[in-house]
Length: 51
Image 1: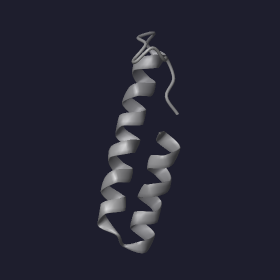
Image 2: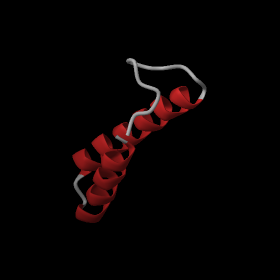
Image 3: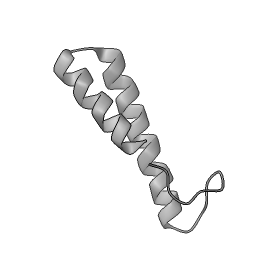
Image 4: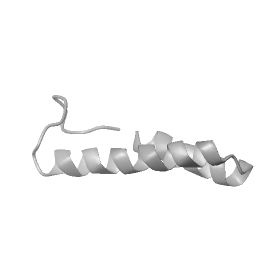
């Protein structure tokens, strides 16, 4: 999820497509939050790591 968000964010900025930038930023933030929750030992949706 983090990698996909980063790719979409970069593509949105390079191609100047705002919807890709928005979706990429949202996926990046959600992925980071889920990774932080997993790192603290709290499983989200039965998984400790979301990629």
